[in-house]
Amino acid sequence: MSVHHAPEPTSTEQAQVVTYEVRGAVAVVTLNRPEYTNAQNSQMTYALDAAFVRAVDDDDVKVIVLAGNGRHFCGGHDIGTPGRDIDRSFERQAVIHWDHVDKQGVDSRFARESEVYLGMCRRWREIPKPMIAMVQGACIAGGLMLAWSCDFIIASDDAFFSDPVVRMGIPGVEYFAHPFVMNPRAAKEFLYTGGRFDAVRARELGMVNHVVPRADLERAVFDMADRIAEMPRLGLALTKKAVNQAEDLQGLRAGMDSVFGLHHAAHAHNAEVGKDSLAGLDARSMARSNKKADGDV
Ligand code: ZN
Image (cartoon, rainbow, N blue to C red; front, side, top):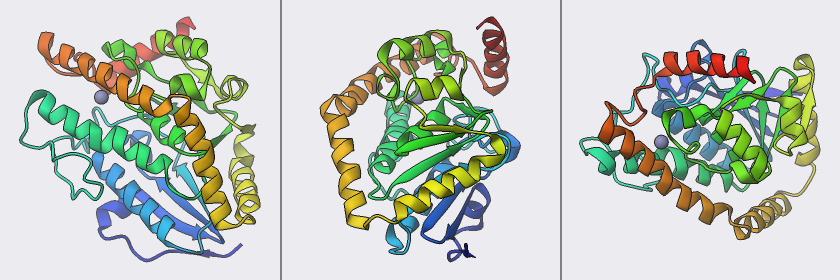
C-alpha cells in the first residue's frame, strides 16, 4: 500500500494537533495531542475541519478514517490542559454563528458551542464520503461527538465509552445522539451513571460495528475502508445521505436542537449559581470523580 503525504497544512499549529495522510484511496485524519489524551481544544477542531475539507476535495480519496494517536482515541473537550483556548478567535469557515470572543454569558457560550461543537459535528456527519472512527482506549464525552459524527466505529477490545457530564448538571454532550446510537434505556444508564461502557457492550447496543484485538485494529479498519473504496463515489455519497435522512426523519436532528437548549439551560444555571458554567469541575476533578464512579459500576 503506497503512502504519500498530502500538501502541508496552512499552519504548523494544525500539523501539530491533527495530522493528515493519504493511504491509497483512504485519508487518515489523526488527533494528535497524545500527551493530553487527545483533548479537543478549538485549535484541534478547526484543524480537523480543515483536514476534512482536504479529504472531501481530493477526488482520489474515497473513504476517511478518523483516528487518535497514542493510547486513547479522545478524552473529551479540553477543560484543563495548558493548550485550552476557549477565549481565542479562529478564522471561521462555517460561519454558523458570530464569534464568541468579547461577548458575555449566553451570548458568548451559545455562539461558541453552536460553532465548534454542535455545528461542526453536524457538518462532519454530512461529509459526502464514508467516515470510519478507529477507536482505542478512552472515548469520553467530547470524544463521543467525534466518533459519533463518523458513519460507524471500529473499536479495539481495550476501548471504552462514557459521558460523565451529568456530574456537571448537564444532560449529555452538545451533539445529543445518545438515544440514537444506542437504545433510549441504555442511553439513560449511560448518562445517569456516567460510567464506562466497554467495547463489547457498545457493540451489543449497536454503537460500535466491530471489536477487534488492539494489535489488529488498524488492519481491520483499513481492510474495511479498502472494501468500501471499491464502491462508486457518488453511490456512497447518496447512500450516506439516504441513511442520514432516515435518521433525521426519526428525530435525530430535531431532537438535538431541542436538547441543545436544555444543555445551555444547564450551563447558564451553573454560571448563575456557581463560579462557572461547568459547575466548578475541571479535568482533574472530573477524572477523580469518574474513577470513583467506575469503581462502583
Ligand atoms: Zn456545553
